[in-house]
Structure formats: structure tokens, C-alpha cells
Length: 492
Ligand code: FAD
Image 1 (tube, rainbow, N blue to C red):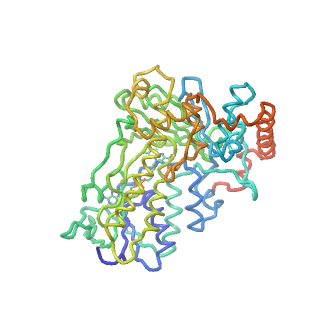
Image 2: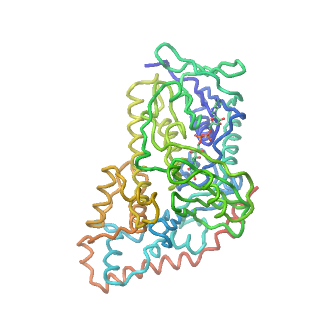
């Protein structure tokens, strides 16, 4: 066990660093000495603009008002992700953040819908979900008693600045400087960060938020990395921002291409664009050309290539160092999960914050929970690639035939056989998410739960129509998404 944790040093000030700094300072700062070291010379990765609804919890913990965060970050609302050309060229589906229909004690709504489909009496599954229909119809409002499950598209740089202002106002000390060396105690624990200007930053607990460099957790502690690129072969991305043309939609667009996919993230005044691709099948030059020929609006910066390796650090907490953000591993942004995983690690660290000193049991618990959570997210992302009807390129043929984790293979089999989906405790994505993506990618269950046959066909029809009618009435009553944004949280 180490000495009691009094001094916390956060290395790095990207989204991960400033989220960590804001949370620790706000929630435990009174009894801790918290400093953050970052280097303007190095800069941040500068992407990461689509989020998922769990971010509300983080903001609630920090006492932040949605309107303030959104106005400061040029944000729009996000109700889901539209997957275009993923199942096959010309076919698309929306994975919304909403719940599908109504469940019964024995089974989920999709079982009722599946029977309805066999009888030819249903509309597309999204018509039974408010968030889905609202996204498609461009409608949204935050209402006191019937809030829709929503997230944000936001400017990552402005978000980090917003959190920095908050953390500094609460007493966090920011040190500008490049870390030249990481010094260790004899037992391997980290002792201090030696900066290029000669300054020494000592601490009891170090949080590695140095991005892909992983300066502390890997370059110093050699923690090890579990490579998942055999499951997720994309290893490169190009990002470019453009001036907005037209009104922003309330969903992220994910457009599959022959060797990867393109994102389009609409903020209030600009759009984030990028292409994620596999360098084995597409060169950087061809990828740049492909992206630039598929953007709308004037580019606001030069396209930038980012290289990555998909996988996870074998331990996210090693000795007296916790890795948060890109230093802890990477899963491509297909389901916008990175900021969520940052938030989860921060909250987990705060919940498991060492009381007397750092015990091995604290470390083991943290690692076990974090790794399990990442496995589920990984499986969900692989699902989009594996279950496809595309055969038009070497990349898609590779994905269709690649090995997948047993945990995912089981889920796919179960859904195919019986339409059943279960959410496990550490699973970020709920049943409605799995169902929307499995159906959207073209999986059709062979059967449905027998309890559905307790309803006569006419009763089933009335049940489905009732849900669909309610959803439609709710959505029709909403204002246009961007009209609401302009009134609720205009960009500052
Ligand atoms: P960085 O932003 O790289 O920050 C690293 C920090 O460490 C910087 O402040 C730097 O100055 C500092 N640093 C490094 N070395 C030193 C040194 N020697 N001395 C001092 N300081 C140092 N996530 C989502 O949730 N949604 C998305 O839509 C999304 N899209 C993405 C698209 C792409 C292509 C990629 C690659 C990632 C995406 N992510 C997304 C992930 C998201 O961008 C990151 O999780 C998030 O930005 C956190 O990054 P970070 O803070 O860990 O690292």
C-alpha cells in the first residue's frame, strides 16, 4: 500500500484531462491538491464531437446546466446515428437513443413487432420510437415531462476550454510545459514529472491523459496493450471541418465506403467530417481524396491524418497511475463511445478513490470493471462490420469473414434463433440499441417469444397501432430541431 493520496497530478489537457480535472476538483478538490500539466506545443487530438446521452450524468454531477454547456460549445442535439450503406449500398437505418415500443414482463417489444412483420401489419421499427421518428422528421425540444433521450454534437476544443475555466475557478493549478521525463520510486511507482524547463511536479496519484502517447502508463510503466485490430481492422482517420450548409440534423451520419466509413457531425455553425479507414485497403492519399470529394461546404482547415491502433491497455490502473482517454486504449468512434468511457473511468476512480493509500484490491477492482465494460462496447462496434450484406470490396469481404469474439457470436446466434437480446450489467448499450443495429444490419430472427401469441392478430394490430399513434402525436407536437436550438442555446 502507498501513502495516503493527497496530491493528484493529471498529465495532459485534452478532453480526457479537462474532464478529469473538472470532476476531481469539483467533487473532491477541497481535500486534495490537484494540478494539470499540458503542453501547448503538443496540442490535442482535436476530434471527438459526437456524444451519447450518458453525458447528462456527468454534467449533473458537476452541476452544469445543459444550456450553458451547449451555448459554449456550438452544440446541437443528437438523437442517434444514421448508418448509410452499412447493410448494403443504398440501404440505411437509424440507431436512435430511444426505447422501442413497450416491453412486457416476458419479452421486449421487438418480439411483438417481429410477429407483426410476419403478418404484414407493421411499419418500420423506428415508427414505434419517439427519438427515432423525431430524428427522421427533424424535430426536437427539451420538455419538462417528456424528455427525449438525447446527446450532443459539440466542439471538442471548446468543451475542454469550458471545463478548464470551471476547474481553474475551483482552484486547480494548470502548469504549462512539456514533460521530458517521468521519474519513478524504487518500487516502480511514479514519483514526479520532470518538465523540459526543469520544473518537477511531484504527486501521489498520477492520471495519464497524454493521449495516444501514453507517456506514463505505457512509455514508463510498460503496462502492455491488447490489440483488437483483428476484430476492427480500421487503423487510420482523416478529419476536416467545414462551414455549415443548411440546417443541422439531430443525428450523426455514418456513411460506409468501400474501405471504411465517413462521419458527418453537424454543429450550429460548422460540420465535423472525417473518414475512418483501413490502410491495408486504402492509401492516405486516396482516403483524403475520397473524403474531400464527399464533403459539403467550405473546408475550414487542412485535412489531417490520424493513425491509431484499436485495443485496450491491459491494465487501466497500474501502480499509482490511472490511464484515462486515448492513453487507455482506443475504439473507433462509430458509436461515439470514447467520451463516455472517459466519463466512466472518472466516475469509477472517484467511487473507488483510495482512502488510506492505494491497495492492490482497489487496482484490481477498477481494472476488472473497466475491461469488462470495454469488451461490451467492442462487441457492439464489431457487430456493424460483421453483419453486413456488402461484398463489393476486399474490405467488406474481410469483415464478413473475420473471426469475432465468442461473446458476440453468441448474441448474434441467439437473436437469429429466437429474437432474444439481453442487456448484461456492464453493457453500455441496452436492448433497443442491439435490436436496432441487428435488424438494421439485416439480421432477421427466425421466431418470436410465444407469449406474443396470447394476443389475437387484431389485438396485436391495435396494440402496435396505439404505440405508433402515440409516437406520431408526440413528434408532431415538437418544434423543428434547429428552431429549438436557436432559441434554447444559441452559440456564443
Ligand atoms: P489528446 O486530445 O491527444 O490530449 C493529450 C494531451 O496530452 C494534450 O493536452 C497534450 O498537450 C498532452 N501531452 C502529451 N504529451 C505531453 C508531454 N510530453 N508533455 C505535456 N503534455 C503532453 N470520441 C467521442 O466520444 N466521440 C467522437 O465522435 C469521437 N471521434 C473521434 C474521431 C477520431 C478520428 C479519433 C482519433 C477519436 C475520436 N474520439 C471520439 C475520441 C476522442 O477524441 C478522445 O477520446 C478525446 O479527445 C480524448 O483525448 P485525450 O484527451 O485522451 O487525448
